[in-house]
Structures are given as C-alpha cells and as structure tokens.
Image (cartoon, rainbow, N blue to C red; front, side, top):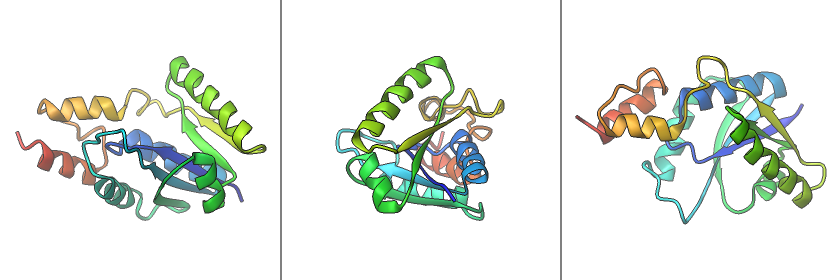
Length: 159
C-alpha cells in the first residue's frame, strides 16, 4: 500500500490541508502530514502548536498521521517509509512550482514520485496566508479551518 508524505509548513492547518490529507489517504492508503522545520521562517504558530493542531484536526481519520522532519524531503520520506509525496495544486502557478520540485526530488532520489491532487471545489480558494490575513484583521475564519484551529486563531487574535 503506498505511503505518501504531505509536506508543508501548515501555518495554520486549513480545511484545504485536511481535505487533501483525507482524500490522499483514501486514494493512497496512508498519508503522513509532515511539517518541515525551517530556521529561516517565522511562523505564526510554533512547530509544536502546529503539530498539535494538525493532529487534533486529523484525529480519527484512517490512514493519516502527523509528524515533523528536518532536512531534505526525500531523506525524510526514506526514513518514514514513504514512496511518494502528495502535493495540492490550486493553480497553474502552483503546478509550475510543484513540477519543478517534483523533478528535483526525482533527481535526488530516483524512483521517488510526486502525486498531484487538485483541491475540492469547497477548498480551492483557501491558503494559509489568506487565513492568517483574515484572522489578523479580526475576520471570521471558521469556514476555512478545523474547529481546533479556529479556537487557536481566536486566542491569538482575540478582537
């Protein structure tokens, strides 16, 4: 049964991420939502907070796990036993970037595949950046994120 790594910063984890993880697990058997550690990024939520929120959002979904990794994606995939990477593509721009990454990963680890999954119509417009902007300006993000993330956003931006 294929095991896919679904990497990202997930800051915050959105309904779009949840949709891809759920659908990916249904198609591939197992998906590990994998948080990359990036020393150059300044996330809104700490890595520990993001891991906890994603784990809570994915609790009870068969075939979905949550973890973090350091270093190269292809190395993390080998360590975790994943045979491919799952990536969501919302637009042609997303595809161009992700196709370049897929080719690079395949060069680094021959035989390592990338599976592209289009978002559902209900989540195609979502991005973590958009959610952060709405939340920081006091907007309602409840339709865009799992309940646990909504609670965390309300704590971070109480007004």
